[in-house]
Image 1: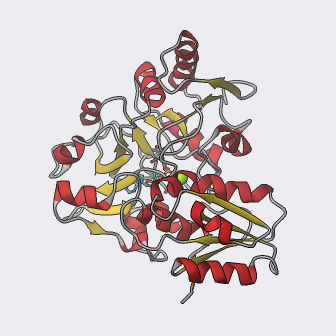
Image 2 (image 1 turned 90 degrees about the horizontal axis):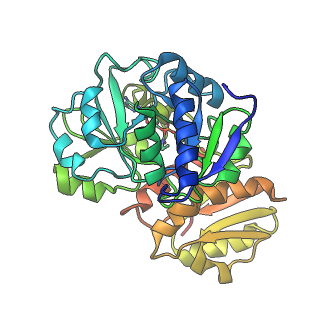
Length: 352
Ligand code: TXA
Ligand code: MG
């Protein structure tokens, strides 16, 4: 850290007040000097540093306790800046660029200017232009691409509000910009254009259906819905690690609404378990604590709250967590499904 303690600044969503400008100037100066700044994006909070400076990028790995071979995403203020650090003359890139800014990360061949610390030793790099005005202004003021993983300690659920950021990053980052709750709530969609067929590595706010409409054939890496195999290392090192896990064991309940509710009602009280469910399930549930969001027809809202709900269970006097899986994997439900599988260590109960 450059500062002797973490400083927190509130910033409004549009980042357009004089106070916002002062906070963003201060934070961008920290980035230019090699320090660490936590900033909001539309997906989750990021722990940012100068992505073209090896020492600054290394400091991110230390602050998070992140394995050195798990690469970082480079964030840009504008898509026209990407070509300076990656080869954008790759099939599919122009089509994907029409979506940017978006909760979308694209893997491209890296140019030599990108330190291998940032890419975890790979010769490809992950690039993204966030929609968040706060994030883009910070990057613009810093004048360098900002490397940023989610601002959690390695293995913990990604933070979507500042209280969750503080749990993990107080005393580890120089500055935290408080931009309120993140709207999407799950990390960006990751697609690689460095494979013969574009391949989805991590589902997120930009859906597989949208990618297919733009690119035609898009493969889904088997690690998206299955426990990691060793070849995941080559394509997406992040898949290898247990992820998004709260402090208590998580069991996922898969099945029709009536069946998962009946199962939870038979077990939750006896096992002192919290239940994470859709909002319209709540009146039917009998459990020590029910955390809920969205409705069964509103997976966006469930996604927006899923990490926050997993984190909130840490503070509850319960011994375990049951969480309901989406009934299908269409749209953003695929992202929720993927994150819940990892949070539970692939512990799924199929109920019928
Ligand atoms: O929404 C997001 O993407 C957030 C916000 C802060 O932008 N960031 C984020 O970063 O989720 P992180 O580090 O938590 O996840 C980045 C993922 C990791 O799974 C990593 O393995 C993968 O991106 N990744 C990065 N560079 C890669 C590359 N060259 N090839 C394959 N996967 C890569
Ligand atoms: Mg992460």
